[in-house]
Length: 190
Image 1 (cartoon, rainbow, N blue to C red):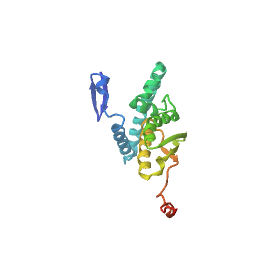
Image 2: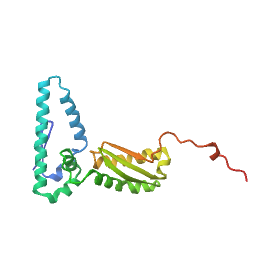
Image 3: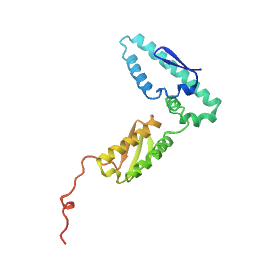
Protein backbone atom coordinates (compact mmCIF):
# COMPACT_ATOMS: atom_id res chain seq x y z
CA UNK A 1 0.00 0.00 0.00
CA UNK A 2 1.47 3.38 -1.05
CA UNK A 3 1.38 6.26 1.42
CA UNK A 4 1.89 9.98 1.19
CA UNK A 5 1.75 12.70 3.82
CA UNK A 6 -0.44 15.66 2.91
CA UNK A 7 -1.29 18.43 5.33
CA UNK A 8 -0.54 16.22 8.32
CA UNK A 9 -2.82 13.45 7.04
CA UNK A 10 -1.42 10.22 5.66
CA UNK A 11 -2.98 9.21 2.36
CA UNK A 12 -3.11 5.56 1.44
CA UNK A 13 -3.45 4.13 -2.03
CA UNK A 14 -4.15 0.55 -2.96
CA UNK A 15 -1.35 0.67 -5.53
CA UNK A 16 1.25 2.97 -7.04
CA UNK A 17 -0.91 3.10 -10.17
CA UNK A 18 -3.69 4.67 -8.10
CA UNK A 19 -1.22 7.22 -6.70
CA UNK A 20 0.08 8.02 -10.20
CA UNK A 21 -1.46 11.20 -11.51
CA UNK A 22 -1.65 12.90 -8.12
CA UNK A 23 -0.17 16.32 -8.87
CA UNK A 24 2.90 15.84 -6.71
CA UNK A 25 5.55 17.12 -9.07
CA UNK A 26 4.03 20.46 -10.01
CA UNK A 27 1.30 21.87 -7.81
CA UNK A 28 2.65 20.19 -4.69
CA UNK A 29 6.13 21.62 -5.26
CA UNK A 30 4.71 25.15 -5.53
CA UNK A 31 2.71 24.59 -2.35
CA UNK A 32 5.78 23.30 -0.52
CA UNK A 33 7.85 26.28 -1.66
CA UNK A 34 5.20 28.62 -0.22
CA UNK A 35 5.26 26.72 3.08
CA UNK A 36 9.06 26.88 3.21
CA UNK A 37 8.88 30.64 2.70
CA UNK A 38 6.49 30.79 5.67
CA UNK A 39 8.94 28.79 7.79
CA UNK A 40 11.82 31.08 6.80
CA UNK A 41 9.68 34.11 7.74
CA UNK A 42 8.83 32.87 11.24
CA UNK A 43 9.45 35.75 13.67
CA UNK A 44 10.68 33.43 16.43
CA UNK A 45 14.31 32.65 15.53
CA UNK A 46 14.33 29.54 17.73
CA UNK A 47 11.20 28.10 16.13
CA UNK A 48 12.53 28.96 12.69
CA UNK A 49 15.83 27.18 13.41
CA UNK A 50 14.06 24.05 14.72
CA UNK A 51 11.75 23.95 11.68
CA UNK A 52 14.59 24.45 9.19
CA UNK A 53 16.68 21.76 10.94
CA UNK A 54 13.73 19.34 10.82
CA UNK A 55 13.18 20.00 7.12
CA UNK A 56 16.90 19.60 6.40
CA UNK A 57 16.93 16.37 8.39
CA UNK A 58 14.07 14.98 6.30
CA UNK A 59 15.82 15.99 3.10
CA UNK A 60 19.03 14.31 4.27
CA UNK A 61 17.20 11.07 5.10
CA UNK A 62 15.30 11.03 1.80
CA UNK A 63 18.46 11.86 -0.15
CA UNK A 64 20.36 9.05 1.57
CA UNK A 65 17.45 6.70 0.82
CA UNK A 66 17.46 7.62 -2.86
CA UNK A 67 21.24 7.21 -3.01
CA UNK A 68 20.88 3.76 -1.44
CA UNK A 69 18.22 2.77 -4.00
CA UNK A 70 20.58 3.78 -6.81
CA UNK A 71 23.43 1.81 -5.19
CA UNK A 72 21.31 -1.32 -4.73
CA UNK A 73 19.70 -1.22 -8.16
CA UNK A 74 21.87 0.84 -10.54
CA UNK A 75 20.06 -0.70 -13.51
CA UNK A 76 16.96 1.29 -12.45
CA UNK A 77 18.73 4.66 -12.73
CA UNK A 78 17.74 5.37 -16.36
CA UNK A 79 14.06 4.53 -15.72
CA UNK A 80 14.01 6.53 -12.50
CA UNK A 81 15.50 9.51 -14.32
CA UNK A 82 12.68 9.40 -16.88
CA UNK A 83 9.89 9.57 -14.27
CA UNK A 84 8.86 13.22 -13.79
CA UNK A 85 8.42 13.07 -10.02
CA UNK A 86 11.41 10.84 -9.29
CA UNK A 87 13.54 12.88 -11.69
CA UNK A 88 12.84 16.03 -9.67
CA UNK A 89 13.71 14.25 -6.43
CA UNK A 90 16.95 12.94 -7.89
CA UNK A 91 17.84 16.46 -9.06
CA UNK A 92 17.07 17.89 -5.64
CA UNK A 93 19.60 15.52 -4.10
CA UNK A 94 22.22 15.78 -6.86
CA UNK A 95 21.64 12.17 -7.92
CA UNK A 96 20.12 12.45 -11.41
CA UNK A 97 21.71 9.84 -13.69
CA UNK A 98 21.59 12.08 -16.77
CA UNK A 99 23.58 15.31 -17.03
CA UNK A 100 21.86 18.64 -17.72
CA UNK A 101 23.22 18.96 -21.26
CA UNK A 102 21.78 15.58 -22.28
CA UNK A 103 18.40 16.38 -20.70
CA UNK A 104 18.26 19.79 -22.43
CA UNK A 105 19.20 18.22 -25.77
CA UNK A 106 16.37 15.71 -25.31
CA UNK A 107 13.95 18.55 -24.60
CA UNK A 108 15.05 20.36 -27.74
CA UNK A 109 14.59 17.17 -29.79
CA UNK A 110 10.98 17.10 -28.61
CA UNK A 111 10.28 20.65 -29.87
CA UNK A 112 12.28 20.52 -33.12
CA UNK A 113 9.31 19.26 -35.22
CA UNK A 114 7.23 22.20 -33.96
CA UNK A 115 10.05 24.65 -34.68
CA UNK A 116 10.53 23.14 -38.16
CA UNK A 117 6.83 23.68 -38.89
CA UNK A 118 7.53 27.40 -38.38
CA UNK A 119 10.65 27.33 -40.55
CA UNK A 120 13.13 27.21 -37.71
CA UNK A 121 15.42 25.11 -35.60
CA UNK A 122 17.35 25.40 -32.36
CA UNK A 123 20.89 24.36 -31.52
CA UNK A 124 22.22 23.79 -28.01
CA UNK A 125 25.54 25.60 -27.68
CA UNK A 126 26.27 24.75 -24.06
CA UNK A 127 24.93 24.39 -20.54
CA UNK A 128 26.99 26.05 -17.82
CA UNK A 129 26.31 27.41 -14.34
CA UNK A 130 22.56 26.90 -14.61
CA UNK A 131 22.27 28.60 -18.01
CA UNK A 132 21.38 26.89 -21.30
CA UNK A 133 22.87 28.73 -24.27
CA UNK A 134 20.94 28.23 -27.50
CA UNK A 135 21.02 29.44 -31.09
CA UNK A 136 17.75 29.87 -32.97
CA UNK A 137 18.06 29.18 -36.67
CA UNK A 138 15.87 29.76 -39.70
CA UNK A 139 12.98 32.10 -40.25
CA UNK A 140 11.28 31.55 -36.91
CA UNK A 141 13.21 34.40 -35.33
CA UNK A 142 12.01 36.94 -37.88
CA UNK A 143 8.55 37.53 -36.44
CA UNK A 144 8.10 38.80 -32.88
CA UNK A 145 4.87 36.85 -32.30
CA UNK A 146 6.28 33.56 -33.54
CA UNK A 147 9.43 34.18 -31.51
CA UNK A 148 7.37 34.51 -28.34
CA UNK A 149 5.41 31.32 -29.10
CA UNK A 150 8.52 29.33 -29.97
CA UNK A 151 10.44 30.72 -27.00
CA UNK A 152 7.62 29.58 -24.72
CA UNK A 153 7.62 26.08 -26.24
CA UNK A 154 11.40 25.80 -25.82
CA UNK A 155 11.32 27.08 -22.23
CA UNK A 156 8.50 24.72 -21.24
CA UNK A 157 10.32 21.71 -22.70
CA UNK A 158 13.65 22.57 -21.06
CA UNK A 159 12.33 23.52 -17.63
CA UNK A 160 10.23 20.35 -17.48
CA UNK A 161 13.24 18.04 -17.78
CA UNK A 162 15.95 20.31 -16.42
CA UNK A 163 14.66 22.42 -13.52
CA UNK A 164 18.31 22.84 -12.56
CA UNK A 165 18.59 25.13 -15.60
CA UNK A 166 17.71 28.52 -14.16
CA UNK A 167 17.96 30.64 -17.30
CA UNK A 168 17.99 30.29 -21.08
CA UNK A 169 19.95 32.62 -23.34
CA UNK A 170 19.48 32.43 -27.09
CA UNK A 171 21.40 33.88 -30.03
CA UNK A 172 19.29 34.71 -33.05
CA UNK A 173 16.38 36.11 -31.05
CA UNK A 174 15.32 39.45 -32.43
CA UNK A 175 15.25 42.14 -29.77
CA UNK A 176 12.88 45.09 -30.10
CA UNK A 177 10.67 46.08 -33.00
CA UNK A 178 11.78 45.40 -36.56
CA UNK A 179 12.42 48.40 -38.77
CA UNK A 180 11.32 48.18 -42.37
CA UNK A 181 13.16 50.55 -44.65
CA UNK A 182 11.16 52.78 -46.97
CA UNK A 183 13.24 51.50 -49.88
CA UNK A 184 11.98 47.97 -49.31
CA UNK A 185 8.38 49.17 -49.72
CA UNK A 186 8.93 50.96 -53.01
CA UNK A 187 8.92 48.88 -56.16
CA UNK A 188 11.68 49.84 -58.57
CA UNK A 189 10.49 51.37 -61.83
CA UNK A 190 11.12 49.31 -64.94
